[in-house]
Image (tube, rainbow over all chains, first blue to last red; front, side, top):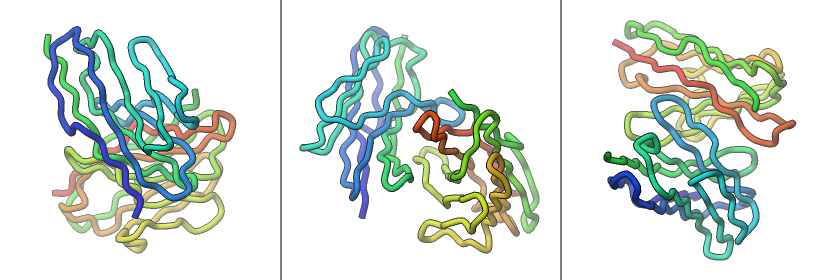
Amino acid sequence: EDKVVQSPLSLVVHEGDTVTLNCSYEVTNFRSLLWYKQEKKAPTFLFMLTSSGIEKKSGRLSSILDKKELFSILNITATQTGDSAVYLCAVIRAQKLVFGQGTRLTINP
Amino acid sequence: GAVVSQHPSWVICKSGTSVKIECRSLDFQATTMFWYRQFPKQSLMLMATSNEGSKATYEQGVEKDKFLINHASLTLSTLTVTSAHPEDSSFYICSANSISYNEQFFGPGTRLTVL
């Protein structure tokens, strides 16, 4: 059975801290792994990772994929209160997205 | 990026009634759309894959006679929750595949509350 597991499920840090969110997967016919940020509504796209070892970066956010060990991490540096959200990891399997449970990140001022 | 809209954004209905949710791709054609359900503090669970001009493919455990999907055009898919019950109360989100952008775009979601 395909599985996407995120950790931690919940994380509370202070503004300015750096956080690392984890996503491991077991999926047949893996194509890509995606990270999303979900606030009150639908998820917004952050990154798509297809190749191992290539870091994708957008401002304070970065992510990398390890296809040998079947995991990805999402890093957020110098966190701000606006980063508070649920971060979802998903894997593409035959056009479909299989989501992890999400990590609820809370940034306290 | 491409835009996907959903209507309504929220709906409250009585138990036993049917509710229709629309998902539209506004500036691109989507041969495939997906319907997800998200219960509070849980992740998105794929319900079905909607293909234009053909029958939807449902995930295991999702009743096709209860959740009717119609993908009548390349820009519109509808999900009808028939004979809704309180346990159907959830956040329903659609997404559409854009070939041009090679990614899936999500609609803003519809919050359904069944009394």
